[in-house]
Length: 76
Image (cartoon, rainbow, N blue to C red):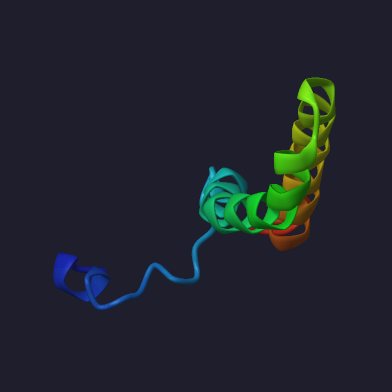
């Protein structure tokens, strides 16, 4: 195959080695913003210990949602 015919092919059908990491990174910003907005009122009203617990819960929720959007078993 010549160089010119290679440039005609799209790379959209190829797997990437770090596809899962890319998918997670792409989803994280949106998911983090949504979870932060959902927890905002509770964070304002919480004590110091309560905020620590809520932040831990937020991180778990963020990771859960990212896993739904970018499952580790999917092909990338």
